Image 1: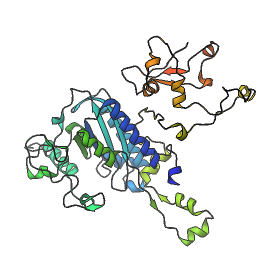
Image 2: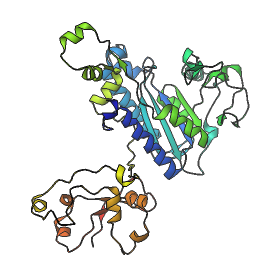
Image 3: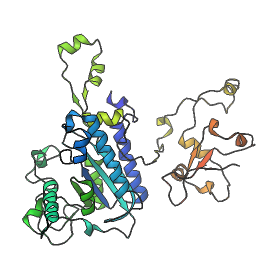
Image 4: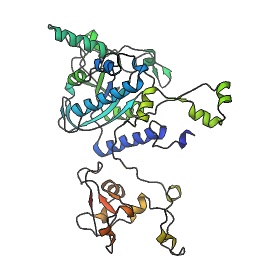
Length: 395
């Protein structure tokens, strides 16, 4: 039953599986992101949040609280993480992120960050608490950092893959060191940690922490860390609990056991708000999934027959009952076209640069031509993934 839920259902298993594949595609196209960041909400500490929910507990006003959290994130993202922004860690080139609420506390965002090569600066990641604070403002800043950035281990910190461990899986307390160092054993970077109070400080970027006003965790990563990170955090599906199937419920509703199971899934209120209001739970990347299955395992849609199709002779070898798939459209691509090199264009390259129009979306002037191409050029050669041009090629 769970496998039958389509990927268009936000938060489902197939939804996050597609998100996982999108992130892998971006890593293949652009390389491994240089940084990962987690931004956690501060429902009890944000004065604007308290005002938005009129002083109530955020659990008592989940719609207003979640909407305000989402608005706050969008403003922060546009100001500090927009492509082209010169940030402390480098010039932002692109990002991928997801919102998460897994019954583990506050809403938070996991983000992969690509910066322009040559501009990355991991030394902007701070692993120490502010010191030598003399003014009231400096002391307030120090107290804030210690409050929101200190990692206090919980029981779950000592479980990895369902087995109990002796050490915190987050690496706390951190080892004392006076410079940024790469640990060959853990495949992770370790940050400056000078005193005992620094050992439980989560690495942060000062500007982002000040602007976000809540816990920030920024990591400079390696390719090995990237694989571990996306497998563990970035694209895992939201868990679901079950409502007890009591006698009262069975008597009240005359439905099957399968329907009762589907209707009895427990989803926390922030995720419900995201779904009902159609808020964006993860980055829209424009990634295409191309079919690579052998012929016997491919799936194709039945063709919607027009009146012209119905009048055709069924014995005609050109008569089709299935719509063209991605492989068929590639095989039927134009050939011998100046400046486009269709003859030597590969299957992934064709679908990254062009999309095929349905007949009804082709301009009437093109339909009247003896031959036309149903290809829309959707991206220049320098950026083959994100669509940004729409110029039709007509034979």
